[in-house]
Image (cartoon, rainbow, N blue to C red; front, side):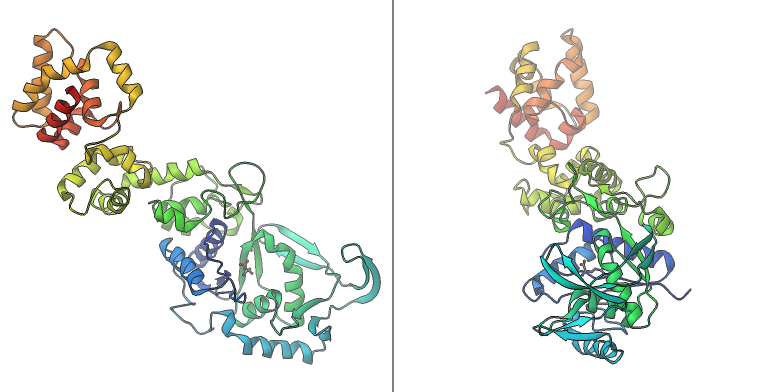
Length: 454
Ligand code: GLU
């Protein structure tokens, strides 16, 4: 078989939708799996929507996900230009071929594609008029995902509009021919266009590429297709919410594909190795934010602390929790405690904000619960002198000092813990208490306890 050449052919709209990202990813995976070429072709024929800004969102999203293209914008290649807006001479030349073969005609200022077959007049319910129809032989598509699909076109269709602009069907097919595309992997919403495309390939006397139409991504609830308004639909938002690209990419690979075992977390090398058409599901997939968050949490836990700190810092900064001047060692020590509990970076400020700011919110329910058992202020007043004098101020010394104190009082050491945690963090849960106090340091801890008692 000739070398695989696949393409991702987006029309930049200003958003990088998860469905587009999935199409890009599947093409990229197939190219990497087969050692083929991944082409990025920009279908920018809609001048209103396809702005430079819209292109940037798309390219940034692709780069963020690590989907590098072998040919296309920025990198060039032998089959360019890679923007449809720059390929008009190519479309003209191909249109000429169809004209020469007698497969076009002009009507009402537009150029039409003439189907082959017996012509007859029929009443069209949609147009509410008599129109000419064609009994064309059905087109057979051996789709790599859907299996055999048969469909007969019944009407000629427009190739070039009145204003001279070529329609999607023409430019899409011409580019796939001119760029030597061997496999077209795209959303199932294009399946209904494919018979038109195959008719065009036949008219150009070119063997159509292999098609693989991938199922829809449904929104979390209900039966609808995920739209750009649904939470989780836009790739650019994952980036700003501090999701890890590797986790998002891993998750998207599972939307409509699976490696035929129960595995979900896979590194990209494994996914490339296992990815192929038989693993693509026929049924629609459903977006599942919880599953994505769980995968993201797994990836977060695996990061070394330097990388975790590097990624967390700007988000804590944006949340107003840490400033530029925050002590690097303190930041890293805090994040070492919080990393195992983190599910996403954008919720990190809620999880560990109190380490950095003194006016942390006090969870009232926790406060009430603690007060039911004992007077927290009295307990804290008891241990304050010990906290001020224990040397060094670390987990081990705190443990022995608090234990000795508790024993002398005929108490269990844990009797003091809830009040200590609540006074210093405002919360009822968090990292292990004594390491937490050690990281906060004596001054912060005693200061907070004094303020709490006052
Ligand atoms: N520009 C089309 C789209 O974004 C490309 C369809 C195709 O992959 O053939 O849907």
